[in-house]
Length: 624
Image (cartoon, rainbow, N blue to C red; front, side, top):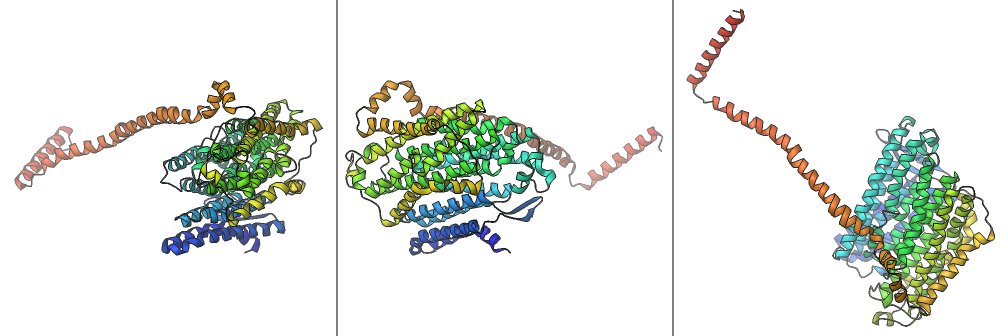
């Protein structure tokens, strides 16, 4: 077999193989558990090297082997999958290195590292799969691992509940995804291997536009579940109950990027579908970016603030794809570039938060921090760089990625007014991102310590510092690779007036200034402002009552009663019919068994009576 094909398979296979090895070694001997972190980190680093080997080779690779019926298995290697594979393995490697220190004292660290390698392997399988059936199996593996890792500290009720919530909400999206894949199957069955990535990409323009739009909308539901888009975003904030390194893994390298990749992978389906499918992608992304920004402003849990920033930035990525679909342009490069930049900065921010929690004994309320820049200079400097990158402050990489999406939306809106409101939502989202990001940073870094733990905080060990330094450098310099990345993945050229290009930066400056007034200098009281906001603050603080609607209305008052009604139907109609048949046979048997007396004279009498009746009937009918 071609070494390139073997390398492509080993990229996801190696982490999967390490899962049982690490788990069993830790079970056999507790002394081996200290090797779990280095083993997992080494395996993922090898996957990164193999991904880089495929990148420098520069060839597109399609390997498909017969699997079952009319489905194949294999790998699909192109610039999109290689870009994702490098990001997943590279960022996951840094997070695993950090986790060696962060999870070092956990007695079940071998279970943790076994599950994170499985998680990473599943995500690598998603991005390299050549068939959507194989893709879906890895997609579900990613969902399973997220459940296991969010609930890793299962003895905490909040963690167990958050894991179930994440699993259930993403299952809603997965049901929609299965239905969408079923529509694609029946539309592409005439082309041979109906769910092959090659088949879908090469033949989408031959398929009915209505069917493609239906399939695209259903598949978007699956993407919304994994990538936390409205209205299936509600699991993300609760998922913060897992270890912070899990949060970094979910938000930066795995899980939430899977939905964005899915839409990008089958991009031609949306391009050749009816226009409304493209607008659906665009406005779900744009609205999510705006909505999550409003909720991030009122959170006090440092990890939940970062969680809402992830939801918002995923909205930008999805909106970028939607812009290309609506305008029939290949905007995959713009979306994936922001995805990769976001992976760097979000891993940096979550690991910085993890270092703070490691030092502050898991205190997560930013109001109990303060003055940490003096206490943890390396960690907070890294957080500062991540914050600047997140808001798109030049010359960080975020300036070259997020602002590009906003400028593109304005450019395309000039010829398509239907895009104009998406531009406004994305623009406002940029302002909100700045406010909640620097609200967090100023509260955490400046002022005086507001707790005993904050007073005695210090930077973590070097094994946790090194990933922060590497991610800080990448967040600062990755912008210089923008043009090369676009050339590699597919370039979109456009220009906008300088005032439009500068508008997001002006809003960033305004957002930093407002955050400084309320949380840096504390010239104004945020609490007083919140009280004057009245119902608006209450609405945002309650997360627009979506959790209440899903739990107290849909689950408790709709799903529960429907389940009860179906159970009654099953018990009294389905089971009743089956049981009635059984009772009828039992009743008949009870009657007929009485004829079986075991007395020969009775049997002889019945034979004689039967013979007489036979003769009488025969005589009457003229047979005898």
